[in-house]
Length: 123
Image 1 (cartoon, rainbow, N blue to C red):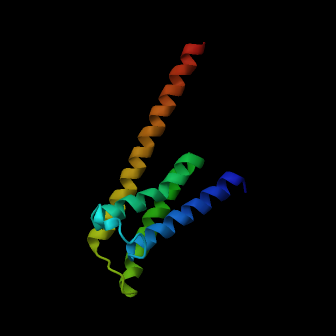
Image 2 (image 1 turned 180 degrees about the vertical axis):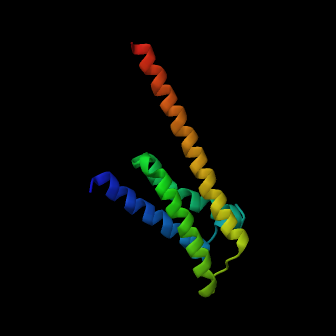
């Protein structure tokens, strides 16, 4: 495995653990003073895609599928372990993941378009 793949896996696991900690209110303790619980869920679950977008953008769709299955598993398991979990938290997680995917895809499209325009100017 290449160093980018190992770094991507490590960073994605750390982001996933941070998102799981937010679900059970283990971390961060005072973030809810600035934003509601659902916005916190959306932000942290959307951050799961960030390492992949920088290191290996070709794997963005499989990592998105991983993040969706992860959030579903976390919200289902959280109910059994006395963590607050409801349908709205799961919806906020999915909104964070899909909006992050859309924003990253738009940014990559703009970068690719600018790179293509520069190729035409050189020739």
